[in-house]
Image 1: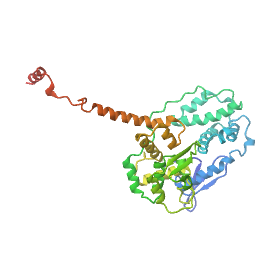
Image 2: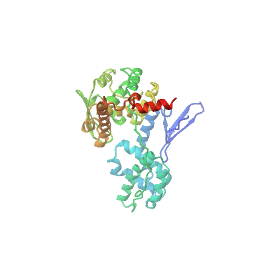
Image 3: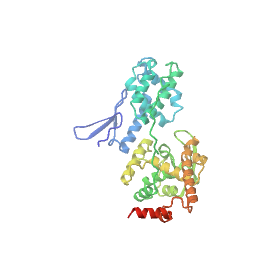
Length: 367
């Protein structure tokens, strides 16, 4: 099936038969993009272009109509609630949601926004998309309420469809890890990326920033890009072997693109997906799944909630309890199995143990 182009991407085939692609956003200049859509080179350039253009979102702000959604968004993007309180990756995610909202409603008056309209928009989205949309709108509307742009919260009272409970990302199995390791030996950047994800157990946005400067002795120390929370992890032998197997480099990060530049989180995610596909791994094997595998393993080895929080840089104990509770259930189940063992519970019934009268009656009725 033909894959859809990334948002704001337009392409055509020139007179020489060469495909050309551009990033074209309303109110921004057209920017040429190298390579083919979804390739690491293409996504790196696209992400850089989007980031470089963010500062130009205010162009024409003096021509926006006061009191409009457009004007309110310009104000929100300039506020400390957006620029200081949100991590850069969160800003990009929220901005993408709000810009789609702007395309449809930018010229409307912000004061006329009402709950029925919000409910209608939520009802048109999948549960996951609705949750992301509501998060983005929550911050925007809080800003509008604080400045009296609106008097009543239009999100108050809206209902959301319940998301179907799933187990989330698939934690890699040992056979899947072995398959990746067999395909990408030590000394390859693919193997180093895999080792960083599995052994460090951090998110893509943190893995792409990791470099030798973060290692002191046997410890790696950083702050999470998204939350600013510090984490300290032991550089395990497997990770040390993957790092030492790489040729000397002057790069500040362990992982770089084919052009020798650091990855963005999104670009690395696409790149790692390609690596897994090339190794013949199923689609369920993702970069986040390696992180989940690390957390699952540590919990099963007896790591406490606070130990997991320190290792993974989590701020909420509930994040750690997802893994420790699961591990505790497995321990209790194994303990129950030992108690049951030898009691006869669960043993198949023995027809000989039935009383003689019943056995005779069954025999007679069978004649």
